[in-house]
Image (cartoon, rainbow, N blue to C red; front, side):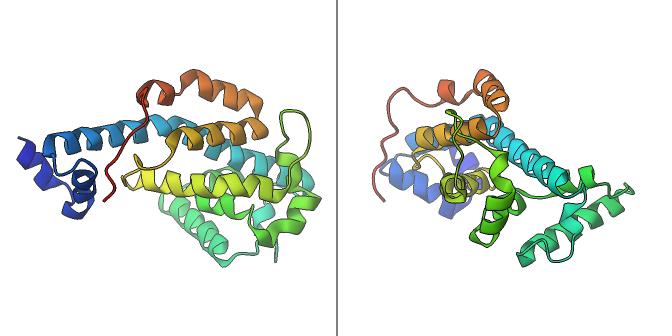
Length: 213
């Protein structure tokens, strides 16, 4: 059974687990299972952060401009963002759904929203977007304060989405940063996340020790 299951996995991908467990197939499969469980456990906090970031940006820009701010000429500064808008509209059309602002916003990818915190949007941050979040002590944040923590979380999110290894990452640190960003955006959302997140239960009591490949 073990050999049959290994055969269903990518040889290149599973080879990393074997290296981390010094060629012990049984322990490598246990590590693979832990990686899967941790990915599952991170889904809730990652989802809450993504939805909260998306909705905070949309709410603030709607209040500052209007509900279809993403259609304003020259407003979006990164080319791939225009492509995401087009893809969202086309997907809705294929489903015979009206491309309402709410539906377009909900269909946009995490990369679209993280891009709103890129250096090209520094002026927008200072003028408007800085109101999406505040520190717990009430003090404001710079764009770099936010994007510095958000960038590696986006990479982690993509690795989870594509079933890549994450056990070699400092996951407790990233989990805390996910909660911190969410708390800056919405203390209520962070509180809900902490209540329902399974990550603290799933992550082992002892640090995950891997043999360097």
